[in-house]
Amino acid sequence: MDETDTVILAEGIFDVIALTRRLELYDNSHVAAVATFGKKISDVQIYKLQSKGVRTVVIGYDGDAVESVKRTAERLKPYFEVFIADIADAAKDWDELTEAEIYGIFACRLLSVLEYKLKKVQER
Image 1 (cartoon, helix red, strand yellow):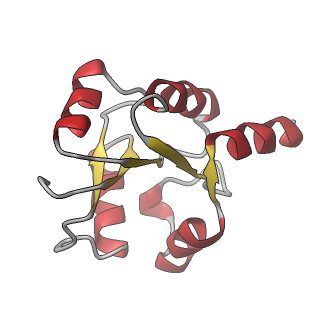
Image 2 (cartoon, one colour):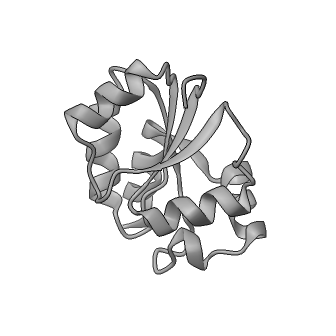
Image 3 (tube, one colour):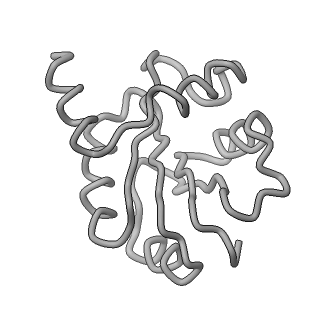
């Protein structure tokens, strides 16, 4: 992961496996899916991303983790360009989405932190 400049943060290992398979990230040295093993990111994890030269972070937590996504985004904003992969169906995880649904999220539902917050306010 020494050359990786973009990471997709997921909650768990099964999400990482699903993203890696469906987005074919096996040999991609610029984009990687990584797990935070929960709905938060630690200082050590942030440091590791920085030390690997990561510039862009896409938060790909489950659709029902709205508050966790907001908190994680605020923690990451000082260090990285941050986007949120907004899963339309809050009941689904990455491993439950089809390849077409995943590509649709990255094509049409990749939001800035501000866009994500505004969207979630409007959905209430």
